[in-house]
Length: 355
Image (cartoon, rainbow, N blue to C red; front, side, top):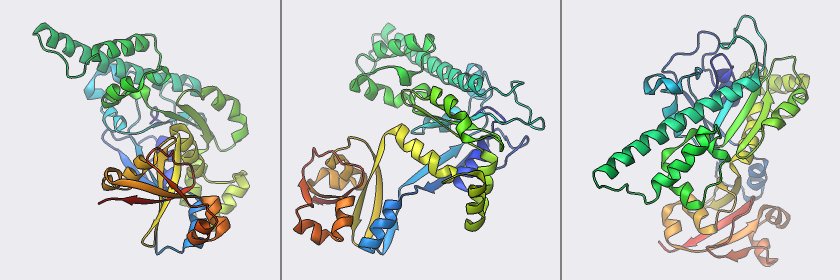
C-alpha cells in the first residue's frame, strides 16, 4: 500500500518481477495486482544436494498491490475506501513511503516527506479501525436494548479498550492484549493491529546507508522498515541474470530487493522454516516461532495434526554433517519428539501419525 504516486506498483514489480502499470496514469480505482514469489533459501539447495529429491517445493509469499490510498479515504466511508477489503485479508502490510524527488511525478500532498506520509497512512488505519469498532459497539448496544446478548462474552469491554487507544491515536499493534482478547479480535482484521513493514522508496542517487537512521526510527512493536530504490530494483528484477548481477554490482547491492524485503517480512512476522522430505519430495514450510510439532504437522495436513503420534527431528546442520538420515540416526542426532516440542528454524521433520 501507499499514497498515490509513492512508487508502490514499481516496488511491487521489483519484488515480484511483475509488470503492473506504473506512473501517473497507473492508478485505476479497481486495479489490484497479485503475485506469488518463492522465498529465497540457500538451505533448500543444500538439502537438494544431500537428499536428491525428485520434486522440490519452496516456501512462498504472496504480494497484493492495491490502489493508492488517498488521505482521508477512511473517513469517507465504504465507497471511498474499497482498498480496505483486500488489505484486511493479509497477514501483514507493506507501506511504500516515497522518498524520491521528481517534478514530473508531483506528490499528492505537495512535498516529499516520508515521515509525514507514514503518519498519514497510519492515521487512515486508525480511523478505519475506530469506525469499525464504533459500528460494532452500536450493534451490541441495540442487541442489549432488546434483551439479546452478543455471541462473545466480554466483547463490548474489549472493543471499548480498543476504542480508547484508537481515540488516543495509538495503533492496536502497540497495545498489549491477552491471548483470549487476541482470539476475539482476530475476526475483525483490524488494520492498525497488523504487522507493518515500511519500505522507504528512495531515488537512484540515494545510498541505502543514508536512510539507516530514518528506518531505525520507524522500527518498533510489530513494525519494521527497510529502504530501496524501486525504479532501480524493478530494472534488476526484469533483467537477465547476467545484467542483474552487473546492475547490483554497480549499485553496491549484495542481493535484490525481493530477498531483503522477504527477510524483513519473516523477521516482522516472527517466522521460521522447517523442512520435510517425504516420497522424494522436499518441502519448505514457514511457521511462527514457538509452533509445536503437532501444529507444524497441521501445516502439512490436518489429518497429521489429528492423528499425530510423534515427530522424528534432525537439525539441518547435523544432517549436512552426517550426509544422510541413516548416519544421523546412527550418531543419535535423529531425535524422537512429542506434541509439545517447539520446532526450530532449520529442523527437518518426519511426522508419524495414525490415519
